[in-house]
Length: 260
View 1 (cartoon, rainbow, N blue to C red):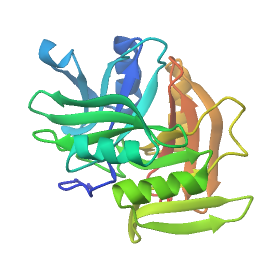
View 2 (cartoon, rainbow, N blue to C red; view 1 turned 180 degrees about the vertical axis):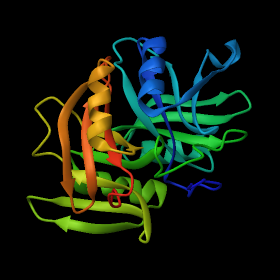
View 3 (spheres, rainbow, N blue to C red; view 1 turned 60 degrees about the horizontal axis):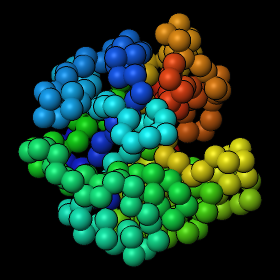
């Protein structure tokens, strides 16, 4: 079991889901990934922490604001949320939610990078982030679908101190990973030619499963939709799905290869 005790600065440390129907989302993901759900008190707005084998893996809360849909949000670890928010603003980002205190858990902010992708900032106190990574029922990979690839990579390199490695740099496949070259935690994909018109840049989360085909069938049984049937690549076996509320996520068959 890959238990995470320290997250690397500037890299993903938490994911949570904003939902228009928290009970329905809770039941779907609990059934799909074998998660247990702990609900916090009123001081945290009934925020749900999902756990796998007792380890925190993800969160769930109600959608904040008008017009927001059901979406997964990736949070990057920062030393000072307010300072990083200001640095991101100077580098061309927009502030979606300014830095706020989350009880004794830490501080958070939400920004949109220069390409329009929404990402969270997490400055931890008691809550350090997810405890498992690249395991069944845990986040396995984080990926930015970028419409403005060069500008967005430059932004994260400047603001979050990313070290990137080029996997491909052609018109057909432009992709860079970020983090330790020996164990990257995510990647940036030049998706401008692939995303449908009107769909902005966005982050996506991959979750580990034992069997991608079986998990895809389970998605459908639970009322979700398989957007792309399981496929094999040199990086592993994957599937793409949405939950019953339209939230997008990916499945990664653990042991089939690195998501990178």
